[in-house]
Length: 142
Image (cartoon, rainbow, N blue to C red):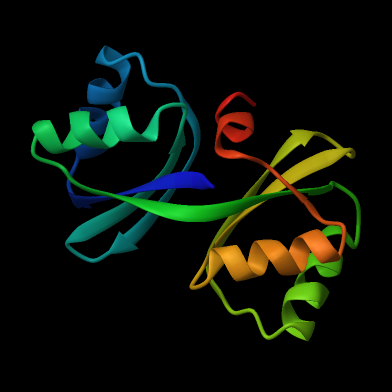
């Protein structure tokens, strides 16, 4: 299963640079990133090529870091690509806790990353519907 890092940072100039510097020095590649404002804190969500090493390195430098299971779905980068997926999830009463996406190749393929309460059950639903998703290693090597 793919892993995502959740990192809480105090919301002030330079903190994101501190985080990226730790990852850079450890030769960890950031594959995707989202930032969310939580007033005094920011929540940073990262896909990296080595989540265990990244989290350990960040914790060692005093960052609050957790690893979350996610499902990274391969979908068409075309109108209706996301609708097909959300229709399947809705039909099966799967609630999305958090999500973000990115394009691999314009007008061809995209990735949609989902945080869901029961990822194993959801993966089985998606398999039955013919939806493809990435293993952790496939995702980190994109």
